[in-house]
Image (cartoon, rainbow, N blue to C red):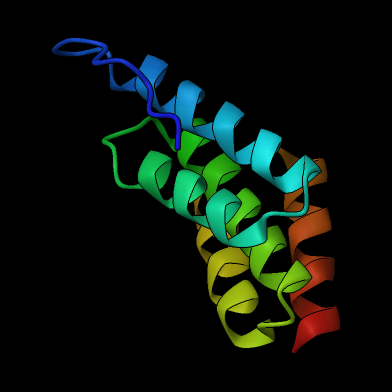
Amino acid sequence: NLKPAAAGPGRSDLKALAYIGLGYCSESKTDFQDARQSFEKAANLKLDGSFEGITYRNIARIYEEMNNKEKALEYYKKALDKTSDPSMEHLLKRKISIIS
């Protein structure tokens, strides 16, 4: 199980990117449990709104793949709260309405 190296104080954005990358790698291997854990580790760091929104979307997508619609919906809503991109907002609202 890989872990990102300590990024140092004030560098949680780099550490988050490392966890997100690990999550994408696990997702590509359909190891959804490991992908979820990596994305959640990224989400637990203090991040800017844009990283936070991306991370919540990733977690939601993984829960959707794991057929856990309740948790997917929860994280899509969290992602919607953190997005400022109108096209992404539209996509998230559509995902939420489909799952609900």
